[in-house]
Image 1 (tube, rainbow, N blue to C red):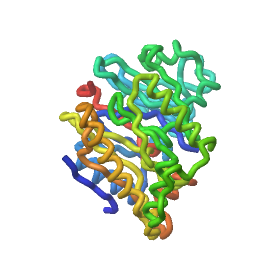
Image 2: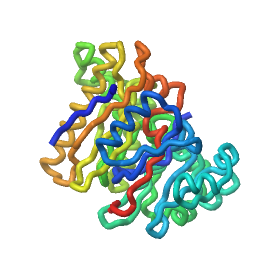
Image 3: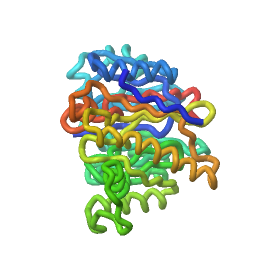
Image 4: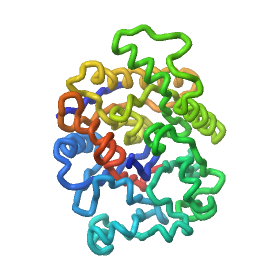
Amino acid sequence: MNITNIQSYKVLSFKGYDAIPLKALHIANHMGKIEEELQDIADKENFSLKKSQYNQSFNQDFKVILENKGKPKLIMKDNIAIMNGYQSEIDSHYGMKSELYGISDQSKGFISGGNFFLGKKPSGEKWMLIGASEQFFLPNKKQIAELYNVKEENIHFIQQQDYHLDLSVRPIGFPFVLINNPELSLRNEQKVKGRKTHKNGFMNKQDPQILAYKKAFEQLKQAGFYPIPIGGVYGLDVNFINAIVNKHPDGSISYITNSSKCDNVFVSKYQRQFEKDLKRKLDEIRKTNSNAPTIKSLYFVQGQNYGQQNEIMENLVEGPGGIHCMCLEEPDFDVWI
């Protein structure tokens, strides 16, 4: 298996969760080596990997599993039922009731296309982070709050650096949120290539990515989150922010993300650098904040090696997206606190 498992002490769009205890990941049929790697991870992490004809390559694009009076409920775009058979067959496959929403149903609060994270505060109150671009298309907060059972004051629109939020932001357990810092990524790129870094930085401070990063950082702080800057994105094909996070009973987390391992020796080093940075930053935060999560395991999913790219890297550029885009998360609502 091309999985790196380091033991220590969710066009790309999604409907994602914060760090949660996973019950299952739902994926499409015939995902080959990526499926094999995900099955190996599922076995280690004690959650199920479920695949069928009712799942698409962009499974996070079209569906979200919500908690409804203690039971899971599937919400999906109505074209999924049209494409894949009758709604009752999908309900039977997922083992839960579903609701269909189309473009005309945006008035009911449905966020077509995804672009949000959903999580809980220690009090049990839910919160949402939504890509700021969705403000042009979404209904008002009241309707979103009713559908997703989130108080209006806990719904926050966050600037994205790229097409959607999961390419630059990854919650890892409230209030902690990883956020890609383009300057840190560029510094790391120079570091792995053996070049000297510049004290004053490489990037123009008015670069759109830098401005987007700074705005998102401040928005997260104002919303009560703890943003953690990290070098997590390297061009279009290497992205460690696009990830799934499984939370364990002891509060530790496992981080499942995309691999940069390929025949390019420098690109292959990016994932090791991300691993070192992530563990170091969390160790530093825990010195003053004991609630910061501990990384139990870190997995990099690669798929086939295509030479200068691997399968996951190619998917990020022109396929079904990264690992979070391909997997629909089903939380274990019985233990999600």
